[in-house]
Image (cartoon, rainbow, N blue to C red; front, side, top):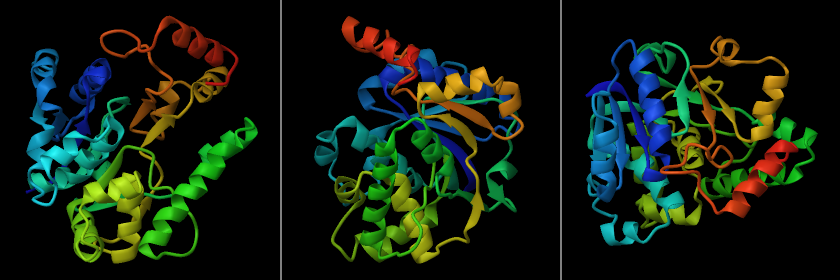
Length: 295
């Protein structure tokens, strides 16, 4: 079993983003860490055509879901994409290809050479992204967006209550994160199974896969906690990118601190496949909000 692989769950709407990510992996993956990509079975051929020659191991989502005997494929198929993708990402460990995996989203892109040691301590123990999200929350308050702060604490409180942890509210992201198979297994053994639940039930209850992992790590201690700041610079909102551009912070500068950058697809819609999503009015409104710094 390998110590580390890269993994990304994708959909056709993110095809162009996934190709961009795969190109950056090919450029900067100097140790040739295996890169797995999971897509809906109906979209496998599309991705095969566009990822040819990129050293990507493409697998259907169903191959992952079927490894959990407690999740019915029919139940999974009824889920909306935002929930289904969290289950696929969190169940990838069951394939048994690696002890840890760097879980990426399609809107990520590597910006410098990376190695196993960037994500694993001593070649084995994952660095865990854990912080109080002051960067994001501080920016939100400065932009008069208190709802972001409220939502953060509401989401944190729910998982802390479910797993019985008191104390500070932590963020276990943003993506990408390194997840160890033993942490997911401990969540199943010590919480889900005794409750008569599977991970699909967990995501229905609280659709926060990174928090399920992080709180399980803190609660059950399956692996040592070695904290890390985020591996990638994440632009949650377009105004954050605009702010950095105005301050002269470009990719070359970011590469001193981060392995990569994420331009979240919720606002960066130009790379939607096959064309930018939304009707003409929504596109115009999105561009207007971006222009005045509200997107």
